[in-house]
Image (cartoon, rainbow, N blue to C red; front, side, top):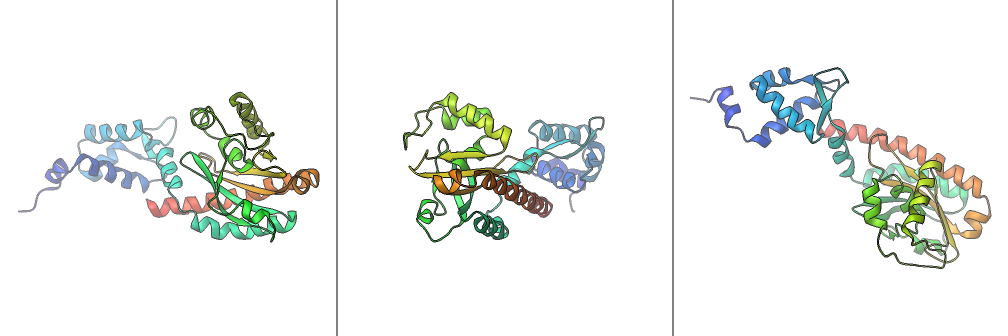
Length: 268
């Protein structure tokens, strides 16, 4: 004789129940109550609320409104999905924007991404000059000396920033900043202005301007950067370069957000 639904629910592994609750909550973007979830899973009301409270405690689900007992998917789960997304699709859709920025500035342009506690370039478009070897994809960007890394790091949790910068740092050139307090002050300015600079800090004679690629509510993981000689990036057309990088980063932010929302729907 087949087990009853109640018996089956009682013998399921706890993790399976949590997963099933997440699957149900995902189907109700505006929120669903613990009572309704319990009915769907044939669980006692108290058990359903206990399980949902555990999920809420770790931010995998959250209240759908300030005065409601309903729950929706939490931001932490969304961040997990966002963090694990592949860069391949983003590289494909971002390439035209990189190409446009390179053409308008006449400089090398690239996208960087935070992975773990390091920032690396993931794609680039560059004129056929010496800068190409400077920003080959996969190259690690010094967190304290690269504009693309600063543009990302500025929007991280203070504890994470301290773990990356509050330690002995390599001095690449005479312009490299290695003092923690000085770097924190610079990152505060990056958050305020939305743009980061590197002026001869990692390689003598080279400069870069970068802007974060951001999605509201999600951890900042990408940045857009234009780089070249100090003469070409800073001394000439600095304001134009800044405006172009910020505008193109905003464009890529919208692309990233749209694709993330689609990825979220598929995943859940």
